[in-house]
Length: 246
Image (cartoon, rainbow, N blue to C red; front, side, top):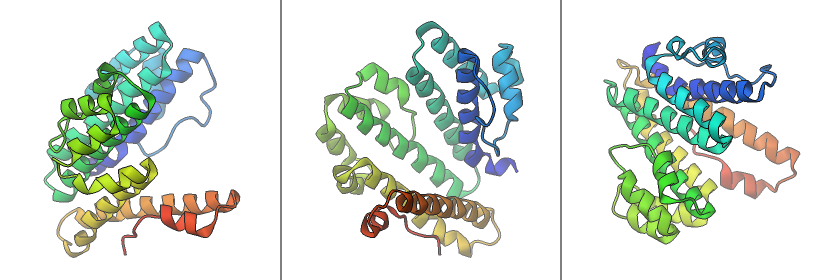
């Protein structure tokens, strides 16, 4: 199952984030963890409670300690999130980078790059400093995080100008529309990448593609149900739906 860990690391780091905040605030840990990670959630909780980071996989130890110490010393939950979100991206990227499967490599690259762009856009909108932006971005091959961070510190027009020099130039129009439109663009790009895997039966590609497709379908169902509860117009819902696998 280790070939699929690239899809499970976000659950691990969500659970790590939840454990740190629960221990910090001495709050209830009922129903705060996600299932389906690579590390048992109770092991993560024990590691934080006992400050025994050796219980965690080696790549998680340093960010876990840094995030918990940061929260203890500053009380800044957002900075704690920055540290762990970046660590999660790095875990995805490192695993994807060494994968023998082209789909997983492409998924990891696009996941990290698109998340970096979203972070840059949101940081620009909220006036984050260059230092904070750099701390949040995770390096990858298709994005120069230093240039992206510098652009984000100067304004959205600079972000768009930088993206025109990358493989994400066609993200400009969705970004001008809204962050949610850009997120839809990212999801659709992944969907287009996984469709050819149906014809590669001798690799893990079809299984990985199926997993991503099912997650996309579940998100679509959640979106539709939420829209119906809030009485949103049908056209508004259709604009937010992603392309399907089949």
